[in-house]
Image (tube, rainbow, N blue to C red; front, side, top):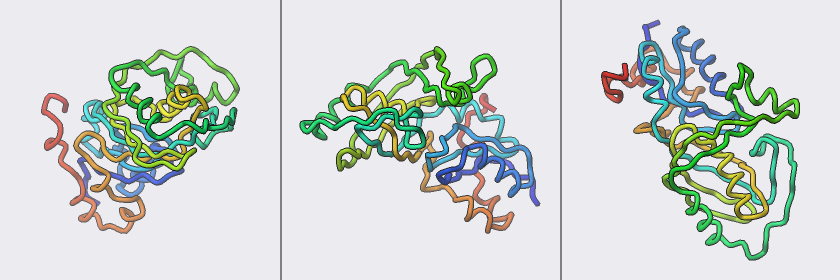
Length: 238
């Protein structure tokens, strides 16, 4: 088995955590030196930028790059996790006069630089304890708002109460929180029902391999898929 080094683009399946993917790849590649440049929730699919071997040194630089997502949310349903994996805590009627134009207008009002409060159901640690462990016990604690930038947020299809969207944002943005906050702005509330990461920096999910496909590849085929980290990361970041 060769000594793999480089960036590997994976199309993450739904239901898997980012850590699950890393663990699986450690087995496939026969190396412990595997990491990722940006977590995806279990519900989400799409581009996971995997770092192998010496490429792990570029993790901070690659993690800081902007992301593009496509997804959907359901108006009128609020959950404790802000997505469809959670327990429903509110169900509200969608106003009859709520149009796609009004939804788009509300989305436009959310563009730009801002601070976002991370959800309780997240892996952020406070005093060494992940927030989601506290949330599962019904506890809530104050969270430090994070600076984010939303460059675009658009409706790409709608059959109310379901809305399909595309968003371009900075690292650290919780898209389910964005959907939740938009639902509050519109009135009936909302929760994320699907999310797919399309791009991270210059990398696109169209270039990614599935885990199933990767398991059928020879070591030489896997090596051919690895991107030399020096081609996309400045030398000072290595």
